[in-house]
Image (cartoon, rainbow, N blue to C red; front, side, top):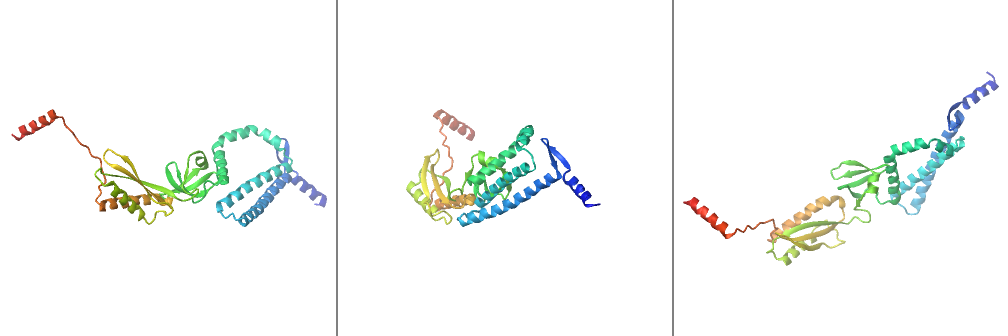
Length: 297
């Protein structure tokens, strides 16, 4: 086989039409060109991400979540740009392509509505930074700690050491309590009722002393003791302290209950319980007395 034949075979392989898109033939050469552009796009994205990370570190941005969010968004933007350039380079008109695939795009949009919604919600979370890894949240009535913040879903861990996958749309569209958004301080409240014959000044002193001795409470704020209500069987008090470990809120609540219980018990103050006084009309009393006398006889 001479040189001209080899050249002809090469051109035949390279110029072979594989398929067509919107009337534009895609040959082996254009497919290889498109693949090469994608490889270069990934390479450029990696370089830009590293440069961006170095620049953010140099400017004092040390939060891993912020840096990761910036790198991820940059990567997506460069990939979209490279994909568009690749299609244009191989001769595919994007306008014609989008027009030809409009019906398919609408169908896919309906089919992937939830996925798209979660993806957009993930981008919003990455940009706003209202939820970050290691944050303690209350989602749908459960306290959880964020392990990983993804573009489609967020992985969290519950107090029972269960790992849950929460769709990002849930975190964006519903009310979520973030205990560590600005600071880790959380207010812990406990209600306790004492009998009406208790010395209320002594009750306040005992509660203040019990909360002041707690080793785990935050010293940034003083405990708050409030007389809240005159109940049917008790005078109700509210005891509040602040803690700096939201994840241990349940354990601290138990310890606060125990401290109040033993402090009131040592002081001789009775914690009230529901009581019911029964008053009978005189005819009923006489009838019962007569009934008891007849039975005795």
